[in-house]
Amino acid sequence: MPRQPTLVGQPVLMVIDIQKSAFLDEKAGIPIMDGYRDNMERARSIVDAAHQAGIPVIFFQEIHRRNLIDYGRELDGTEGIHCLEGEPGTPVAEKEMDMRPTDYFVHKRRYSVFFGTETEILLKGLKAQTLIMIGGMTDVCVHYSFADGHQHDYYCRVVQDCVGGTSPEAHQASLNAMEYLQEGALINADDMIAEMLSHQIAAQ
Image (tube, rainbow, N blue to C red; front, side):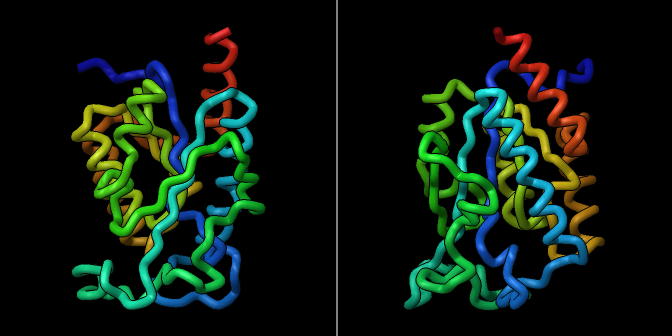
């Protein structure tokens, strides 16, 4: 197969779990790699470009009930309790990411944005073909969302300096795995912004 363009058809930006905790000094529940906050701050430039280009934006929030009933097997590994409702770090980083009333919002109880959510219905309504992914964690929610998007036949693109993992090694391993599934899946923020803005021009 020839290498596909970066943006095919209608793109949609997925802002995966960029929540208040990314901008707080105190972290709880999940290990994070050095530079994580820098990457989340850089992600704002992708949201800005999407707004400017008229590309739909979907914000996703991982959130769990306080009685822990919906964690499932999520606490069996390295992760501790995280994204608990009512905690200061759990809300979406609306101000930091300039979330707007015209953006879409989906909450989720599992890693993948597709699992047990309305995401597929929303993407069909938006006539999405390319999914642009930013956020965290690279090796957890982003990776599983990418794999599900791939298996639903979407073109998936990850802005690699706007995602962050639980460790540098896990971050890079997941980026490698996603590039393995779709050649050309990985792109830097500056290049993605240029692609998004040129896509807007081409659509006019």
